[in-house]
Length: 138
Image (cartoon, rainbow, N blue to C red; front, top):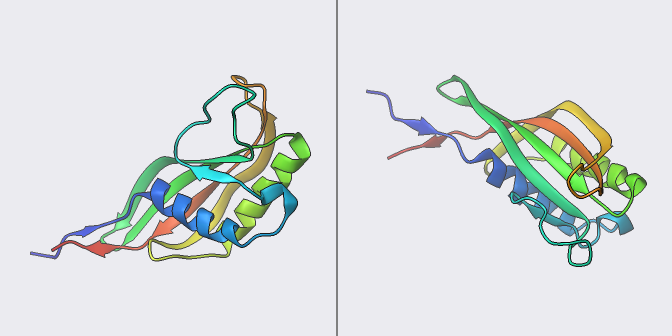
């Protein structure tokens, strides 16, 4: 019997990687950004912006050791320009980075500027494919 192989949670892996990557950035539009897997909450006065939500659209396995996930990153900001700039920065950082859980990423779409129909806030989003590192189960 082969040793079982699993892959990390893509949402958490990309969230953690993006938090690390943004921590050292000095761009004014990136300062204080909250990175979470949870949706944006609160009313207009209490929302912490910029806010980045990381969501997985599905995890896939091509072979025993090749796992990947489609990950959508939604960037809420105070205005369209700042949101677009932060989304572009996040995408560039993720495409050039790796971690203990993520071997690398490729672009699928975006960044695409739009508005959030529920809050009316400016929103830019992009989608990547994250290549996940296999983990041997014991």
